[in-house]
Image (cartoon, rainbow, N blue to C red; front, side, top):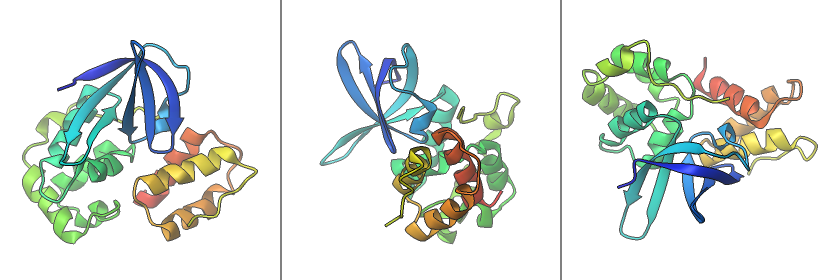
Length: 201
């Protein structure tokens, strides 16, 4: 089992990165690929290896604590690695932890593919297991058929990343209408603002 990979980021796509480690390129699915940049060297990516009958996938995290929170989420029946990654894509991890602590089902159902039953299950199973994430060094995501805008590739990449996380076309379109009014931003900034809008914060 891999704990982390350290190498050079060679490819950044809306739902994954490729990290070159000693000449081997590892495709890693991450919550926010645009935290990374192509050519970035000596990058450490914490990883979780998922093995199923027909595929082997790597999921990546910016810190050991983010990976630990991911592992808590996938321990719940009905939450797979991709759903957990979509939940962690929202940079407000403390908001997630507080929602679980405060029985806030409505907050949790804003994430893609999380209905009321799944949200309730998350609360029941994790409410007493997140004490270590309540400390001052709490986990945080260190993020620095949609009609795309050909004049704004940064916005296009951010919208594609939202779609890859599982948000519906209508949700992405709604966010696009708000983001297009912003001054020119980086892909990372568009993605952050989009996630904030989708979570209702």
